Length: 387
Picture 1 (cartoon, rainbow, N blue to C red):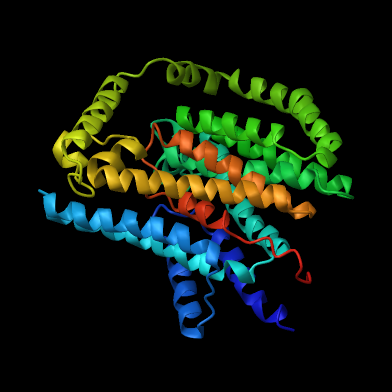
Picture 2: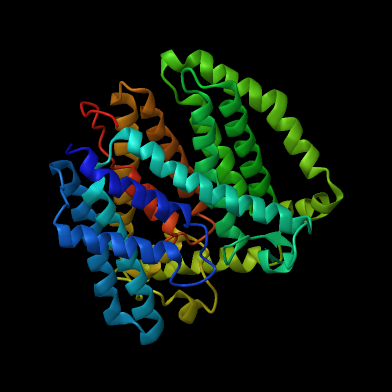
C-alpha cells in the first residue's frame, strides 16, 4: 500500500519528461511541471536524503557558493544575475529529484525514461519531417538548414536524443521481449539516430558515438549473447541505414560542409583559450554570465565558461560533482542484480557523451544534463516490491 501511494510521483515525472523536448519557449512546460513537483513534494514533506547524497550536495553547494563569490567581480549586472538564477534553478531541480529518488524503484525508473523516450521520438519525427519538407511551416523547425524541432538550437536538439537512443537499445535486450516490441524499439533507435545526424551538430555526433561505444562494450557476462545481437543489428541494419541517409542529396552537401573546418572555429577556440587564460589570472572568476561581455563571444565550452566565470574553486567543484555522479551510476550498474540495472549504464554512457559534448558546447544550462546527473543517484531499491 505504501508503494502504491507513491505512484503519483512516477506518473508526474513521466508527464514532465514527456514534454521535456518542447523548450522553444521559456519557461518551458518542463520547467512549470518540475517547479510544481518540487513545490508539492515540499508541501507534503516527502523529501528523503540518504547519507551517500550528503557528499554531492556539499560539492554542489561549493559550486553554487563560487557562483555567488564571482558576483563581486561582475561588470554587467543584469546578465550575471539572470545567468546565476538559472544555474541555481537547475541545481534546485537536481536536489528536488534526488530528494524524491528513494521513492522511485527501478521499474518506475523505466516508466520515467519512457516519458523521455516519447518526448525524444516526437521531437525527432518533427525534425525529420521538417528537414525533408514533409510538414507545413517546416522552416519553424529548422535553423540554418539544420533540424532543431521544438528546441531553440540544433546543438541542443541532437544531444537530447542520445540517451533515449541508448534506452531503446537497452529495451531490446530485455528477457522475453516480444518480437513486435523489439522491432518497435529498434525502429525508435533508428529514428533517433537519423535525427541526430540531421541536427548536423559535430559535438552531438561525437557524443552519440562515444556514448554508444561505451554502452556496447560495458556489460555483464550474462548479457553477452544479447549484446552480440545488438551489435549485429547495428552492423547489419543500422550502419546501412545511416549510409543511405547520409548519401541523400539533401544531406550529403551539408554533411561534407559540417565535417570541414568552419570559419567560426578559429574564433570559438580562440575565445576558449582566452577564457582559460582569464581563469588563471582571476582565480575567483570574472562573474557568472560575463563571458560574452568580456570576450565579445561565447566560449562554447562548459569547462572554459565555468573556469573563467566561477574560478578555480567553481571549476574543480563542478568537475568533482560530475565525476562522483558518474561513479554512482557505474557502481549502481555493477551492484544491481536485476535486469533493470542496465538503465544505470545507459545513464553513465550518456553522461560521458555529454561530458565530451561539453568541450565544444556550453551545456551548463541544459535541462537534460542536470536531469541525467539526478537520475544517476536513483538508488537500487532492489528489495522493494514491484508494482
